Length: 349
Image (cartoon, rainbow, N blue to C red; front, side, top):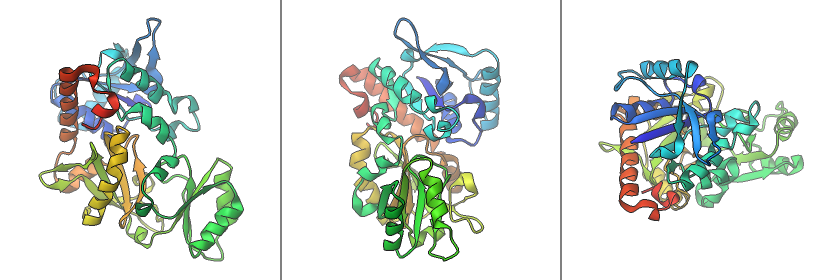
């Protein structure tokens, strides 16, 4: 199997990233693997999708650091020119929000080249046609109301203030585009809070997402991985972990100091997965990360859900292996059925 992993920039990848864990797992299973910076994708004069890519030189690796050091060592030197159209699988793992400020051209580049590659017969996950609909948090609004917190999306400061008032003065404000807990404000109802400044700061960059504050948020949230529409499991254990805020910062994202703890996946959470499954399967979302507070869905990360290593460490299990095995299954299905299986369908089979 030939697999390409698209990332924002190869040089900025870190060993603990889920993408590196997946790439090493694929390599250790004997597959040809390349990391591709989103800016290294191109379409040649013959119409083929090509890329300057960096691949490992050894057959197997014992550590993520050794694997990434090898790949980045080549990336700093001479990259290998590959024909993306000749890959079996192209996994889009670049995060558009990372490029929003400095490289706006890169935000949708992976999606656009992925769409062409899929049209040329490459299995592209998550399905790029529907990833285009998920560049900002409006995608989240397509899931059932019953499992989402009360939400407003607006640039009208009066409407936002009225919404906060309807939530008894407690709400979470965040940008429509963004991830990793960046630009997130908690309104607690205290008189000394400068709500006007919070709103103005967010409006300056676009739309504001205002959500009711859930009291269970003080315990953090649970990142639960879903693959092919089902909770990712190994030996009866779910690929999940609780992200607990540290200090006085109620944001639980790992990028802003959240701490990973073992999670208990409840029946309510599993019922939530069943409710989002039809949409995820319909949209060809192969691997996603659901962020759950209590039994409410807070985020659906469809681009580069991270934390697979944290889930594995806490459960003492390898959750990367079944992801690669599922890709192997999709390649076998494509070989058996050819183009009669559309990419969006194959993505979650």
